[in-house]
Image (cartoon, rainbow over all chains, first blue to last red):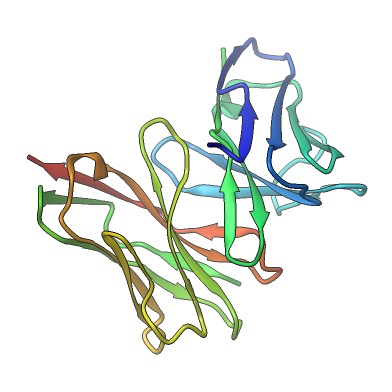
Length: 114
Length: 114
C-alpha cells in the first residue's frame, strides 16, 4: 500500500484563489519532505524542501510568498499555491525520503487554474 | 551541481524484447545514488531500481537491471522481456548532495508494441 498520501489528486480553481495540497507520510515520521513541480511532458523540478520545525528551503526562482509550505507535524507537509494563475497549472508531487536509498512519492496533484 | 541527461525522448520496443534506456550524469560528489523511476499516465512515481556509487555490482530488480559504468558516468536501465504495461515515462534521477532530494533527467517515453 501507499506510504505517502497526497491530497487532492486533482483540483480546478479560479484564477486568484488559493489552493492547499497535503502530503502525508503514513508509515513513518519525516522531518524533511520535498515538493516538485512537473509541467506537461517535462521533468520533475525540485521546488522546495519542507522542514519540520523550521522554514522551508526554496530552490532558486521559486517564489516563497506564492508557494507557502508548512510542515505542520512529522507526518504532514502542505503546499499552498496563493493567488493562483493559469501559469501555475501543473502537476505537483511530494516525496518523503526513507533511509539512504529510498524515497517515496505521493500520487501527485494535478492543478488546473481557470 | 548535479546534472542528469537522458538523450532519448521516445523509444519503441516490441513486446517480449529487451530495451535499454540511456542515462548519463555529472557530479563532483564521490558518494551518490542513482535511481530509475517509472511514471505511468496516472502521474505516480514508481521506484524501479537503485545503484550506489560504491556498489561494484550492477543492480538488478526482476526484469530491471542497471548497467552502471562509473568511469563513463552512465547508468542505463535495461528492461528485459518488455510487457505492454511497461509503456510509460521513465526518469533517471540522482540523489542530491544532502542525500535526500532528487535531480531528475528529462525522461524517456517508452512505448511497447504488441
